[in-house]
Length: 363
Ligand SMILES: [Zn+2]
Image (cartoon, rainbow, N blue to C red):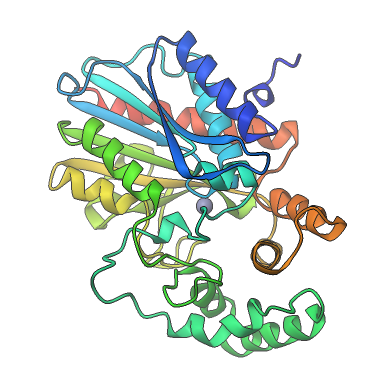
């Protein structure tokens, strides 16, 4: 049994869930479990989002810190490890007066259990919080590239399709390519970064968690754990919400720490309909800030290629075949670096970020 932070991290959804629940119980947290009845795991396992609350009950806490893992399913290995570590290593042991912490584990349990970034409907949950009764954001650039990045015969003619995609990238540049592919699209359910055409189960779940635990608070901070962008092991704080939220985040975590998707300082393209959207709706005009804590793994081309293959496998391939298992392992490596060094870096950054958040919420 190791003593380093790597012991907080798991190698399956089931193991992660057990570690989280055990750590939450040991910390005397109030725990709720919510089953996603729309899907099961690959071996028929039931899928749950677990919520642990520390500190005063809703209505008695003026400040709330939300720590959420698994928005992008498989990225939950990282967020879960940080949550478990925070619970076990007394990062949350002495909360300031009137401050509660709400840890949401595996908000997209399907993606976590299946090793996919998306949910049971191939939806990117972090693009799903848009007005589904209105007009969807313009995704015309995605429409241009969809055919070359997600063709049904991707794996049979990989070199040809790659050449076409690289030609588009060369002509328009990497930033335009990343924007086209990853901003979120609402026209291709068989594509990647698909935002859905209705609110996902996890969307409703997250809104109800915010409603119960956030609405009555006066101050709130939300940290959503992600992986797959930026230098390996480094945690970029991507500011969510408007200018006021980002300015507040910079006061809390440091001027140079919080990046902005709108001014080119972030490794992320501008994203539509992210998890911060309902958070800021619930908090209305009250004191609030939110970040995606985004940890690097491997380079972006490898990550995007991994997502194309994962999507192809889901729609056209056989998960149990040798190729299927190779793709599953490849996707996992895009979002989870299973070395002690990476896990220690990740947890160290999480610890500092959480500690500063608690100080900012103190009365
Ligand atoms: Zn993510």
